[in-house]
Amino acid sequence: MLELAILGLLHESPMHGYELRKQLTTKLGAFRAAISYGSLYPTLRRLQTDGWITEGAPPTGMPASPDEVPLLTGKRGRVVYTITAEGKERFQELLTAAGPETYDSEAGFGVHFAFFARTDPATRLRILEGRRRRVEERREGMRDVLSRAAERLDAYTLELQRHGLDACEREVRWLEELIANERNGTTPQPPSADPERSS
Amino acid sequence: MLELAILGLLHESPMHGYELRKQLTTKLGAFRAAISYGSLYPTLRRLQTDGWITEGAPPTGMPASPDEVPLLTGKRGRVVYTITAEGKERFQELLTAAGPETYDSEAGFGVHFAFFARTDPATRLRILEGRRRRVEERREGMRDVLSRAAERLDAYTLELQRHGLDACEREVRWLEELIANERNGTTPQPPSADPERSS
DNA sequence: GTTGCGATGTATCGGGCCGATACATCGGAT
DNA sequence: ATCCGATGTATCGGCCCGATACATCGCAAC
Image (cartoon, rainbow over all chains, first blue to last red; front, top):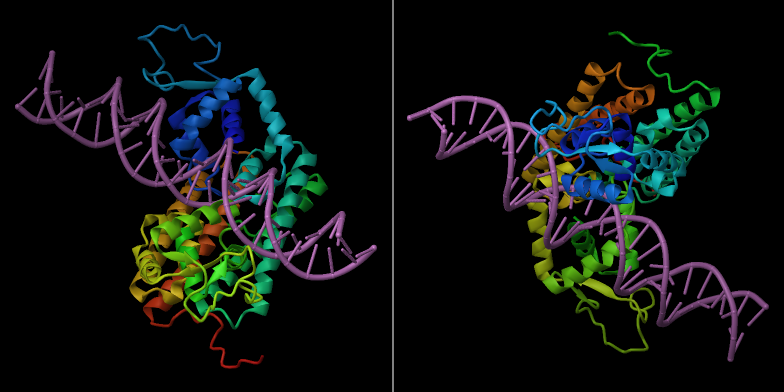
């Protein structure tokens, strides 16, 4: 999960940990809150021993003059991570793997979705449909609770179920739209074809 | 988190692990997916060593005849957990504690909210407002991403942000309503003055 | 110039929770 | 009697988090 996200970001450009965390937080902020260093650094280490990434800038110049380091990416103490060729392969592999863990957790789905632009259409469709199925299951569960046990529960629990149900219905509709677009060959294209777009 | 949820459920009636899990899943299903046994049983053990719960039925009869056990709650092999007096105190303590971890995670908030009926009004308000602040922060972050970097991101990432933003705005509105109700002294009252109770 | 200090940045540690897995028991079908 | 799936308890390895500890840098006060 974190592995996929990190490889995806380093695929775009080399980065040090702090910057990585910042980008992760904004790019994936829609589904998960923030990435902790307590998971980031160990994962970076693991990726390194697995050979998917390396410390240090890529072979793009980099004269290695210890006191003439670039201002933004190589200061003393900073560790810049760069993806390797194997890492890029691994990234593609993870992108298309997309097992059940992809649909189950918000975070897993969010990460995969964030890299949809680099995922092949068949996999995109598979993930969207898998996700839809899970959310539909959750939705049905809540509907049952609301219809069958409405009188046993206190008003707060009831309201919680109602809110959750609403969120699920909304997500299903969102997914339906995305799936329809995928089937049309229309990529995502949300900004246009939208009735209201005042400013 | 799990501790609070378990104590809350056992506060209503003694249960064995399987049943506990089922109830947890339905009651908290709105915010978190399901509880794993891999976290349930260790937590039960911990609660036991801490003295908040005990194995075995409460002192309600229970003649301890080994082959005349009740049908639904004491079969051989089953372990029924019962909350202790100290456990009830602990439950109240956790209910009112409600630190930042309550607002930050979906799960944490969901659990606390699920027991709002047994939470005092001041704490309810504090939790709702804390949660609102967090969601607003997330919302602002996504707004920034959408307005400032709209052209740098691919359509999928953009769509993800848009969906996340929408969800945040919705949750804030929901929280506003709940807060207003709390301030009015109106409890939750979502079913809109439901005076009838037909079956 | 050196001393103090907040911001930047790297790293670890303990613990909670999860998914997978392994058993033990029960009830019913053959 | 015996097999087998449903019920139910329990553990293990691993991911991820929050808290915490350090180093270093820029800068301001003296």
